[in-house]
Length: 421
Ligand code: ADP
Ligand code: ASP
Ligand code: MG
Image (cartoon, rainbow, N blue to C red; front, side, top):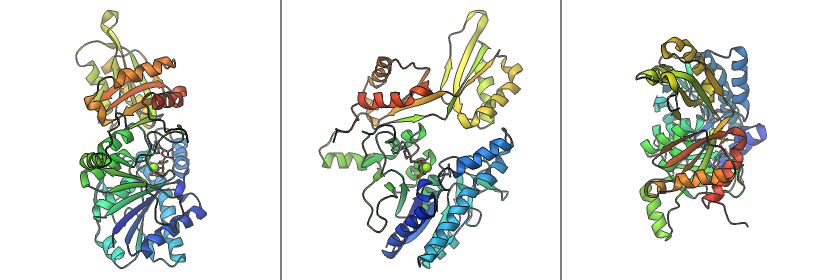
């Protein structure tokens, strides 16, 4: 007998027929004698719909009330799944974030999970009752509901798996594993049997939305065994292999066993949710940049790429940087409020940008990855607006309309295309 956390994403929970399919899959696992907790997302599209209402109510909506609104999607699906399981003869109950509780820090809309009380949960699971837990939500110190940021149900699942010391955390989604890039963009993307925590963390952080970044970081820290699988296979059959996330050592051992070389590039990801901000005519003197990024940091707005142009005449310069699209309105508000302190002339926001990134641990010991990227993009006339790099990643900012083309071009350039069948 194993203790398993099963997580089902929005597409898997979209409508009663799919929920019945999920229930049948859970039932199959329970009948094998395993102890099961299920973490669910809201129905596909529901969170977007709820976010839309919040924006309509007020562009600078109150984050605490935003959480009240958007957490509701998962409440609905957790109740529906528990009901469906019972109707199929499987004992089950839902546990809302505040009922366990799943405690988080005080950052509304992007809260981090702290502790999860597991006493009642484990007692209930131990008595054979399937626990159905809404993902994405938790409870703050003051008792208010919090949410974990978009895609946060993955993190809920990994956090629950760590808290109950589960043998596995199976993430069921609408693709059958992690691919070399988004298979919806590149038909010849290849499924990875294994990917390391480090590479998955980097891929997720630059936009491969198959797993939320924090879920991977948490799994790495807590040693949770995570597997990405399709929820669309026959639910009464044993799962087909998906992608297993492994440590460096496990990957190296497997490569050795198979007498395979490690790929230089693991994958390519894109992110259309970035926004670019340019501040013109910022004074070119010590402290100017701190005046821009200090207040943004205080407002918990993450800045990613930064370019400070070469100073123009009169000791002035332009500063360009990117922030998450969802934080753009707040970032502009913060910067306008600091206009006199920073001393810029104009703010130019641009949401029609995308970040495309190549990721691979092989880069650490291999030169030329970035230049190959720039050349491949140049050959297709794709203009680069900003660049950033880390030890195992190179990212470029480009015009949003060229995203798909750039991803395809790079996938081919790095030799990642699957052979034509
Ligand atoms: P869920 O609702 O199950 O959480 P998501 O939509 O959040 O599912 O994530 C799954 C989607 O991630 C896939 O449908 C796919 O389009 C996208 N995706 C992006 N990059 C990758 C990748 N490298 N491998 C697999 N899927 C990817
Ligand atoms: N429903 C939330 C979202 O769409 C959380 C999730 O599905 O992981 O972002
Ligand atoms: Mg997701």
